[in-house]
Length: 209
Image (cartoon, rainbow, N blue to C red; front, side, top):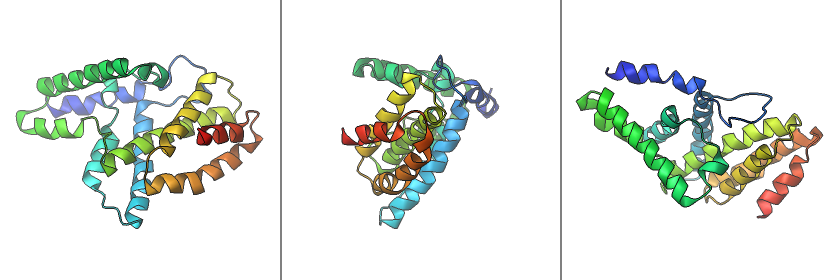
């Protein structure tokens, strides 16, 4: 019981593999994904601050490092399934949030419950920090899919993942998104130029939508 149970549960995130059921040259766990999202978000937030935007760093670290904790209870559900309909997405979110709340009620000491409810909440919202989390989360989808496409993985799901993540990123109005599209993405595309899969064409199609 207590916070020990929470700390111990974090190991489960190392065992949950993202994008289950598809051939991958390299597996990625939810724990690895969460760590990378924090790293992306730090740099994205620095770009925002360099453009005069105020960033609540405490909030940013809380929501980025814990944004997928609920997958301990429901696993990693593939994005096309998760977003098949607004109703399904809402139901899955309710289940995830309900199980996180139940975990907090059962295991976290009373005086710490408000802190854990704040830290483990759904962090994607209209705030700067919530939008940065959204961009960072989708950036990791871009990089995971890119790594598979670059190696010649012909699973259609990685093309869809790459394309949809780019479409979502470009729709978010942040300085760091412009920086990503203007300075980071071109380097990524150039690196993938020798891939048997036409990553440049897929990128252009996504950005044109």
